[in-house]
Image (cartoon, one colour):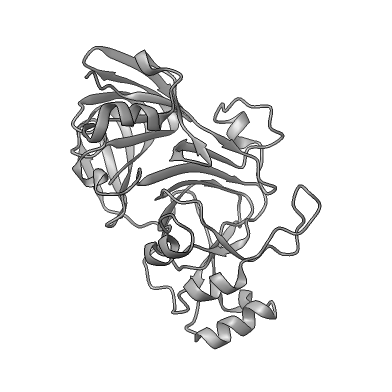
Length: 319
């Protein structure tokens, strides 16, 4: 079995709030009017990554993982009932809905898939851009329910001005909304379950209001004050020809930003995802190499040695 790093083609989404940057700056080719999200690592039924290189070119990532077996993802990932991660680039030309995601217990019971804990890394943003990140004060469920139904919940949300490089860790149950003019790299559990609390009265592509999920959102939202550190957080460590900034570490995933300026080796007991956020590089392994650039996404199988060389910013993630 010849496992090797896979260069991936991302499924693209054109939700109503998306823009043009993923086409014009990141090179995602499509006939879609806009690209809201690029699912740069995905085995989800709503859109799968497709392999672009080597003997498995043209196959879905999930098909190659099935061929290679658990050795491709590592023992930690194989504990999950399906592929554990979904990684996206998100271009919020307009603001996203105010929303929340359930935890595993609720989502598996109600939706039949895992819940969603996620992390945002702000790749870029317009001056003055802001997002909603949890609650600015503790309220009880009764008040939350009342505020959701009378459209005053925004008054108790934590509005945060953002800067390029900021990090937000979003546990399941955290009320949140990406604001207008923000480009984000998101590492999340492999789930597409979202409960909308408010969509500001917008109409969808069909001319009708997009559905809300008020009762489920009330069930799962954590109404305590947001206490997780955010913003310019994360420890830095020099490693090889680069500097690693730890962005998030939890029982669902680990994510780091690699500022590459030379050679950097990738070898983990888990599979690794590498997404190029800026610059360009070469990835080499025993028997092959590929040029990678802004927007490239690479799946490195578990216990497979690869080296990236060049000058780039690369989002690394694993379980």
